[in-house]
Length: 510
Image (cartoon, rainbow, N blue to C red):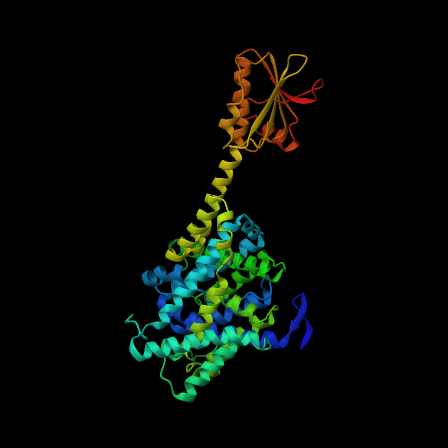
């Protein structure tokens, strides 16, 4: 079953059996979720399935890495609910298309690399928060069909809970005997057979919405193309693009770690943008990579692009031909699969190392998880996590600046600076010097330090002025080329003049 597939310059070994079975499993888990989020946002149900098909196919073929599954994700749909309620679905389609253009631009300008700025505690918080969201969203399946929001009781609740428990048991037990077929797919088939064979009455996919329809039709959003419309849709498009790329690139990094391979973030951004652009013109609600379905895909043994293609084509076939069969699929089976995905997604290792992590990292991880869970805003959660981590790093780095002081045989006092000089360390830097008590000649040695920003230049300039006012000479020694260039560029702003001193071979302040 193993052979090589060269698809769009991505050559890799493919296990066709694993890929096909994984694709079928992913499709079964993606459809109810896409339908649920479409209904939640007030969209026609088919808009969710069209998004799953278009996102899945385009990103599977052109995306930044194999194994990554995209679809009509709740993270991006939630952003569009307010626009849907205020202006209608035509504006939603326009916003989705604009978000796609933004994502394409980010990929073309190679800005996806900034995902490297996301530290590990933020990753832990992001993943754990998503795991909780996936799990909590499955609890909604224990409610009555429709908009009543009432919990199941009595026999329906018992049946639902029993089928979910049986699904989880099958997923846990099957891998002990065979891994030839994905355990989650076996569980879905078994539960389907049990429900049909015994005539058990329980919630099915058709209780959520009909999945029957035609091929996604081409449709230009019915809006007035002017500046006013742009100002309406642009904020939603920007947030959607940011949320989609944040979740997508973090998921890509997660898959990189799990598979010990390397994906291409910029290529993924372009593919994701192209898929969203098509969504805007083919009745799709847009989306992004879906971590739950991606983990289902990987756990089923898929490592190539074929599984994503199979999943998206399966969804299309269901829309066109298979709605009567898929409509009878028990929700309990899909719920059990997604609960196991949530358990597998959670970084349980974060509990084992929590007493070994710095307190600030623990705080950041918990905060990111909390924002993800309660606000469902992944971009905001990651942004806040990165900002706090950066501020903590700046504070810790500022405390590390040191100065070794000594007077040589010529009576010249030397300050050897250790640690970066930047905005946060300027105060500590200034406290190192005793201008009134220093001799007539002073050398500051930056061999183990560097001037990093405008605040640092200003600090050096003010220190120079203090020594000049005291009638003393200050020399700057071992300035790196980039530091000299930084100071040279600041001459129009502050009074800094660098002259090469042949005696010291240093830059001299006068």
